[in-house]
Structures are given as C-alpha cells and as structure tokens.
Length: 417
Image (cartoon, rainbow, N blue to C red; front, side, top):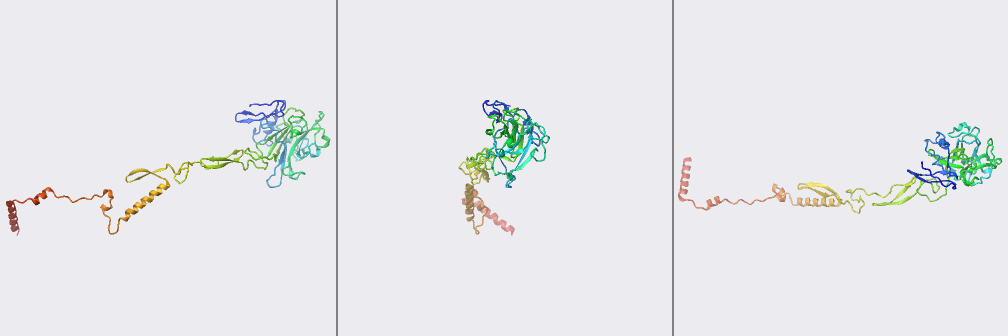
C-alpha cells in the first residue's frame, strides 16, 4: 500500500496519493502518526452484527475522516413525523469508563445542562475490539446498556433539521490526575474532567485529533464514531469509545446542486435537476446527472439510412444512395427505391397501360398479329409470279403442238363417253 504523510506541523494529514485505480486519503496526528493505530478498529468494523456485513468493506485507515462532525436526525418512515436514532456501543477498549452523548450545535456545550447523555459509564470491564458488547454492558435499554433508541421528535428542543454533535467525557482531570474508578459525566460536579467533541474547534487539546468517523457501506444513514480519550494521545487506536449510530445524515451549508453524488443544496435529494447541454449530428439535447455522473445525450443519434422518407443518418439528404434490384422480360437492372421516384415511375406505368388499352375497341377484336408487340409485327407483301409462269403466259404456243394437245383431248373425251 502506498503511504503518504503530510508534514508533522499539519493538524490532519489529508495526503492524497495516486495508487492504482484511485486516490486515497490518510489522517495523521501532528507528529506524523497515521491513525488509527493497531488493528482493533478494523476488527470492530469487520465484526458481524455490530460491524459491517462484509469484512473489509470499510477500511479503518483509508476511510477514516474527521468530517462531517455535525448531523441531523432523519425522518423515518418518510412523512411519519418520526425521527428515531439508534445508538450501539460496539467497543470500549480503554481503561477509562467514559460517557457518551449529544448536544444541539446551536447551544453552548460548556454549559452542563446542554450535554445530553446517551451512554453512562459501563458497569463491566473494558472490551477491546473485536468486542461482544453484552460482556461489558446490559441489554435493558438503559443508559448502561449497549443499545438505545431515541425518538428525537419527542425530545425537548427538537425541530426538523436542527443539528446535533457528539462528545465523550473521561475520568481524566484537567490537572492531569486520573481516577480510573471514577466515571466522567455531564453533571456540574464533573466539569473538571476532560471532554472531547466531534468538533475539533471545541477541544482544549490544540491540534490533536480525538475523533474519527466512518460511513457504513452496509447500513443506510449509519456512521461509526471512534474516540481517543487521552490528552495529547495515547495508543491512537480510536476504539476507547466506539459507537455505531443509525438514523443520521450530515448537515450541510446549502449551495447550488452539482453533479457530484452529494446533496449540495441540503434538500435531502442528490444531484436532482442537474443537466448539461449536448448535441449529435441529428440535433441538440441534454445529459442528466445521476449518482454523480452524466447520462447519455437525449438528442437522436444517426442511424443507417433506410427508404422511409427521413434523413436517418442526419447528413441533410433523404433516402440518398438507396437502390433495389429489379428485372423485367428484357433483363435485370437496379432501380431507385426513393419513395418519390418510385411513385412517379408507378404513375407513368399506369398511364402507359391506360393509353394502350384505349386503342382497342369491341368492334375490332385483337388478332394474333395485333396483339403482338409492335416491334414484332411483320407485314408480308404478295409473292411475285415466277419467271416460268410469266414466260408461259406470254410465249406463243407451237401450232403443231397445240393441235396435238387438242386432238388428244377430244379423243379422250369420246372414249370416256
């Protein structure tokens, strides 16, 4: 894995490194220590039931963040007027018995009355990750149990959209003394105990990081809050207090919606109404954003030209270059299949047939000769007489021969009689 560290003087090392396929960010303390240390946080994130459904779907080092640090309860079901938030304490690896709670971000968190407890100090021993929370806390839904659900719509001061943030209070005193058997709490009697908030600006520990947040890849509107409870740091494992909270979304400052997969205008919808102009050879259209990326252009795309009277390939010509094979008694050829040209040709053929039919009447029935095509009709002239016939008709007969013929003819007639 490629590691990038910022200079130790920086509050948080958001070192962006180009590794194969993605950019990764890491958070470090001011001394350059990348957090969280040890494998405890990853072990709790991967634990079935209390962690993610698939091990490794949330990476303890790569996916750790310090923002967002304020949230608002989510209406669930939508339109019900109910705003349930479920808190689960899934790891407490510290020797300290800490308390955990929330406050309204528009109220003064230094006033103990404004710190509202979710989990009081545990009754059992510490539970390092991977932790079975029932081994350190009860399951009765009380402040000492490991799981509680608050219906925020029933709590004083609630209003839809009003933001909350979180805190832990430790048994460590402001003077540095420690009383491990004591329990930190929000009461006035515990004001000399160190308190750490999800907002770094509220902590009295300078630029030291006390809070990491992870967004669940398995559960909707769910985040993991991990705290480090020692002043100026300890083991940096961030599972001294580790809670999984369901029913929250981060607050945001409204700004114009952009195509980035985020709710920029804080209306509960993501990338809504974001479009960009586009065009193809066939015209103009728009691309609509969804889940952080723009979709296909709505303008028609060019297609193969077909014989339909339209400009399918968007080149400003209609039905161009289209032909179809054809044949008649004289041979084969190709004809245009343009609708206009085909229509004209059909009309011409009909007119030609009508003109031919008009020359034939009922009193002049067709003969074989007249029925044949004009190109095949042949008119033969009378055959002239042969030379022999002509000479015989003009040449005078020999007298003796003529007499002989006549005599023979008369004798034959008498004999027959």
